Length: 322
Image 1: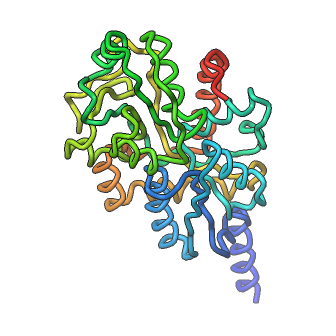
Image 2: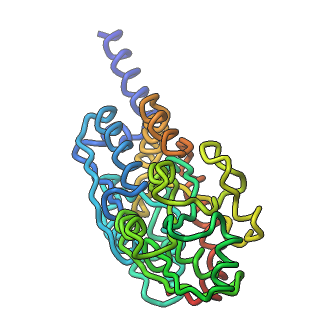
């Protein structure tokens, strides 16, 4: 009897070393909100992660596309969800950008700093500026000269107001002293369709969105926005190489949860994300898309959002991107 009591006591003490929330979670389906329409890079990353979550956590994980307002619509849904880990946001660099733009315009439905908790950066994804093949320019320098000399009326498209391409387009116009009309779309997929059709001439998004079309010659890659050239597109110069260091940004996709989600749940989701992006099948798919698997800590995800909000605030204020 004494031995039985000691064994039971040991089990109780062992269980006490693990947070209850993490032990029980999840007990029902998880929803990952993608604040853009299906077909873009963020959607692909979310679905790959969701599939691994379903297999590892033994609960259905669904991807819910809620595009609109430059990603703010989907983000607001997550911000107002119960802080229990069952509703997550698959965000990208557009999240800090659009959050700053809407905050400066005093119309943001949420506080990006206070209403979210970082979970994990899933991948780093290069950004590429693209053009329709009819544009007679092979890079940004030639595009600037073309617009300056011929006074052509080009349009450039973005995935929404306050998105990365919106900032890039307006900053390029300022620095190159050229003019282009901005057309905002509700996500990467409709932007790419219009760019492929030639109805807009210039666009840009995460590399994986347009890599196949670039390789097929259906789109031109004018520049990449990272600090170094991309291995799978070694001949495409960076924006800094072309004299446009102001266009340099670090692209990413990562998970955020509502603020006040239990720390144990956040940490479990971070571990699951790291395991998901390091799975050989997922890594292979990411590398095909030019994405770098990460699986960071919650703190690193929080820090990149705050860092980029600080970085983009003066740019958006100056350019009046609202």
